[in-house]
Image: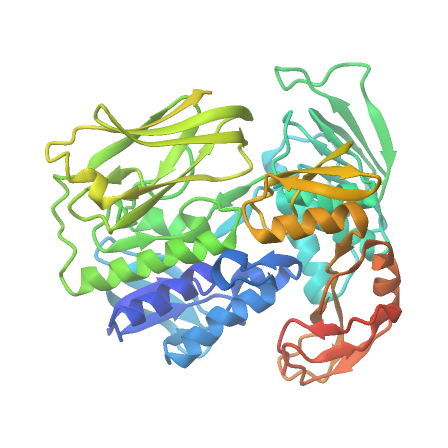
Length: 421
Length: 121
């Protein structure tokens, strides 16, 4: 059986950054497995700009951002295999994969980094009534068709869901000559970033209807129209509020789900909130030596933060291979929260193992205005930061310093508490 | 005094900006967390601009790819966005194309070049 110290599952932004950082931490036995024909992952179809401001201090498009990291991997001569599908990861970290040239093969890995990314929630998960006509696409599929394949999915478009890809595609389809009639969002707030509402909808006069959902799709062979209606606080359509749109295309931008089939096979414990692995401060999952980063861990808004998180996973995997990351979990303290957050990544923190600074990321469950974000170590408040607005569509973070933990040798609790200001 | 509230579009942080104007002249900008926000706010209320991204056809690629992604090398006036996409509608380039190659010079008379954002060999 082939042996590698670190096997990285996925050659998108997370996998690439994890590989480069593991290399820079001194590790040389690294292999990236990627199922697509090229490295770069979803960034290859995200041709819009706005990437990289934090990492590179310049504004890049998705393909340009991906190329920076592909170049890092190539410069370091890190091995990768394309067109390679990973079928299984065992709890003993034996990775089973296949491709056309090698057939099925197994690799014995000392450490595995999960970087498989996420998938779009499909129509089947929505219970929308109607036949199954042509013309219903997930926003990401439409993005691939327009930007990579060069096909237009339709001319008159309704978009359900205000996730970022849906907003980006509203603009993209408009620029390519389509008429985007409306974006309907079932929640009373947008699922996407504010900046995308401004530059993708407002710039082009595309209406966003909050608290609205699709109640009927007309057409048997091809979509002929879509009816939306307002929903009440119970999320049920309000009779009499129906609006009909004649259209040939319905795009769905209704959420992303971390792709964790392989993680489950490896025995990794998953969070019921994020659908991603439960990880400690080292981004290590419940299976020792298996790390997770990027959208497979929790869905991010910003690739710059994926790269940062993945770099930490790469460094930690390298430390694990060197035997420097103790398997002793007795010092792990759960990170608890109240007043807004739905989850945190990481879920636990061992002060002995944390780096000089540690970023804890979370999302809130509803739009909240004028709040304090506090972090308490037992009774001591170590973070007290005012936030004008927090929304489920925008990830929040708090940065903890190792030095703040030095006064707490017998620390029992870490609490993130969001309070009205 | 006119007050305008904007959302900065430079990065996904989407800072909430407040611009105070007097007779069309910017008196103050607040709410930004980096200097791009200040610059954006001043431009947005006087001469709004955008970077335009798209993709154009490419032939003869060894990788068999049929499209290459492009962008305006700098931001262009917001009112010119549709002129720009119209001007590159029928552009076809031949592989190889490298990141940064000019795909269409002076696109739609903006004085800005349309450049490739992917390398396709």
